[in-house]
Image 1: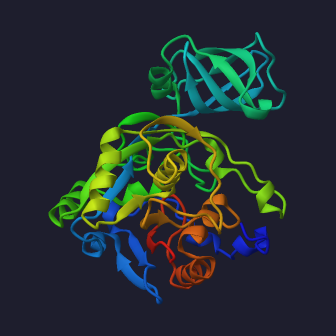
Image 2: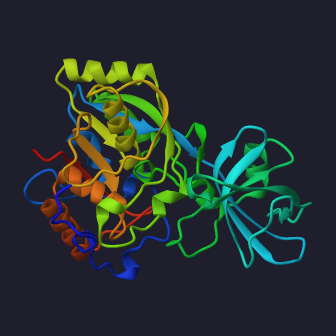
Length: 352
């Protein structure tokens, strides 16, 4: 990454009222900022099919958001809130725990049921994860089923309201199939069945992969030395069928269109493993994409608007060009686009 970039180069002023607290009434009714040309074009997301060409390949992330947020108390009565980061074998979970005093290994945490039913007792096994910042808990049954019953939708910290039944439906993409994410791949939230039919009718193929988004997606970059930042690790898997679809798109002259930064990170990580060609299989990635990164797979990117000073803003700046992204974000703010998870989207072309 060029050394002349500092954290301040990825900052911008965002009026708080532009942070979307609720999704658009219909998924594809959101706005779409077309940032491919020299001048931005204001569109609606429903126009996306007309911006793709026959032969292109749309790649989506089929991860499913789990109800990863648990609320309860320690036996002493002190409040506890957990955010499950990952489900492990043996009915264990790895999670962030917030309480006035950290629970000790061998202790118990009691989580409340949202419906007021009998609580869930979880055994504290100790610290876990890279750096020991997380806790390992053992649940008294299959974790995904228990989280569905006791958990809350893990809305991002910038969404001020408590999760509702509408969030349960809308903070989940139509592609969601494999449970494991604790944050939604938000660019996917704009797609619905009618839009997908229109994309298919356009002659655009579709393929999927899985990247389970972790809570670290909201981790801020601390310090001005961007190169010193270390990304959280996320699990992803790319099927052989998706690799074949990418190869076929390349052979016919089509472009690879990634839906979301999570899809892009998975594809580019797999290409690094394969010396330029996407490798099928499951692995971990902690790839940190900043200006100067050499993209090998993705030609177009559908993405939401990201937080100031965030790693995702650095990623889109690497993809489309730093100056281009600054201009597009300035246009989005002045044109009153809605930002972040429930906000509007943009379509970007890879910088030459």
